[in-house]
Every structure is written in C-alpha cells, then in structure tokens.
Length: 235
Ligand SMILES: [Fe+2]
Image 1 (cartoon, rainbow, N blue to C red):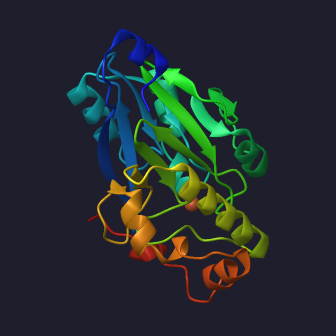
Image 2: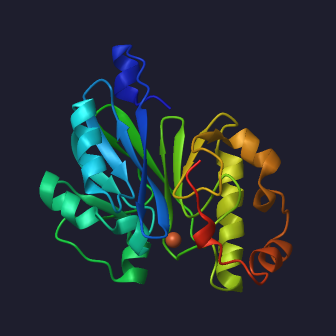
C-alpha cells in the first residue's frame, strides 16, 4: 500500500528491505532494515546479536534509524532494542498487550495498538497476532509483512497451551484473509526457505495454513517433539 502522501505527490515508493542474518551461539535470527528510498528514513525489525551488521547496513544505505519495531518480547527479538534506541535516539515500538504480558521496559518504549503510522513516506500497519505470545504483532510495510515468530515460511511459532494455539489459529486466519497473494513474508527465523516468499506460496505449502478449525489446528500445533528452535537455518 502506498502512503496517501506518496500517492498525492505521484511518487511510487517501494520500501527497501535489507535482510540481516544474525547469530549468537546456536541462535539464528533475521533482523530487517526497512528503508524509505524517498526520505532515507528507516526502521529495524527485531534487532538482535550483531550490532556491527546493523550499523553497517545503516551506513551503506545512508539511512537514518527512526524506530525499532518489535514483534514480541522474546530475548532473541529484543536483544539490541535498548542499545540501538540509545545509540540512535529513537523509539522502541511494541504492542501494549506484549508490554503488559512481558513487563519489558525501556526509556524509549512506546506502546502501540492497531493504528497505522508513517515513517518517512512508508506506512507502518500493525496487525495484532497473539498466540506465540499474548501480544505478538506483525507489521505490514508496503507489500512486506514482518512476522517474527507468528508465521514462518515452513511453519508457525510454538504455542504454550491450547488457548494460545486457538489464538494462533485466529491470528493466522486473519493473515489469510487480510494479505494479498503477493505479500512477501519476512519471518524471524527460517527452516531453510529464504525470507520474502509470497503469501500465495505459503498458502499452498505451509501446513499450518491448511486447517479450517481451531481444535484440529491446536491438536497439531501442540503435538509432542516440537521444540525445533535449534534447527533454524539461514537459507
Ligand atoms: Fe519467540
């Protein structure tokens, strides 16, 4: 979606997504720098582990960091939120529900709900997607959706119990309804697929998007032997 201001000026703005594969010991995450090519203002999604890589991406793109988008409060998604907020004097955006559930605090923390807001000429559209945690938020920027641990190309995030799995089912259902087939999905982790696959591919191939009722989804999501975090890869 083009921000109304952009449409009014006649500029076609396509946010640039820079994929940062970052690691710490056995953890492998994707952080994403999203740059508005018109204003060179940028946001970073779920910054973790390798601050030098993030600094270098900002320098390479000549972008100014305007804020930190956090999908949820797990340590591998907020690892560098506070240091970056201090260094670049910018807000940390997290859902109000996640702040309440996690107790996360920071001087620059800004609780958000579902209202979109602009950064440069990009529009940040939060989509509330609880299940993996009570306050998970996905962020739609243009035709790119940043999903954290809600939706992977090959699966979805772990849910702690049946009620959480029901919430995850509803969250995934919402994404199936709301997203365009060409929306590109940028997850926090991968089991092998490169980030940026279109939703249409996930609709065909991701087994967690094939369920039509919450009970069978929850039974499958909560089956034993599903702590696969150590199997995360970079494609
Ligand atoms: Fe997580």
